[in-house]
Image 1 (cartoon, rainbow, N blue to C red):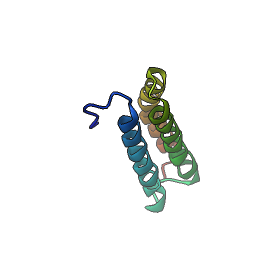
Image 2: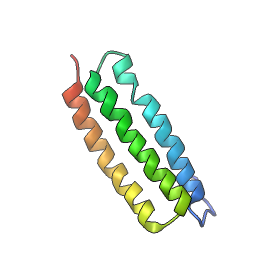
Image 3: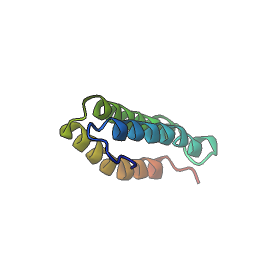
Image 4: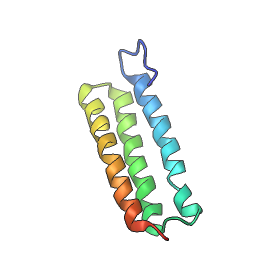
Amino acid sequence: MWSNGDLTGRKSGLLSAMFALMLAVFSLLPALLGFANLLWTIIGPLLALIMIGLALKFSRDGERTSARRLFFFTLLYLPAALVVLLVAWRA
């Protein structure tokens, strides 16, 4: 992330929220292209919305605990998303 000189964490949090918002939009693509069913259409953007919420909380308070929650959720996001996509895949 581009957070040079950001001591408060506000810029990092807002950038994280912006990228999570783009993730929410792009998570609809598998369903729109016919690769995933309703399960992914609901859970995929929901996971991204959780990430947006965590990023906005970090941008508001700038605390280390908020940053850690966001970081650990990003570590859990990809395996969770891949499992849901695997279950929701339409061949």
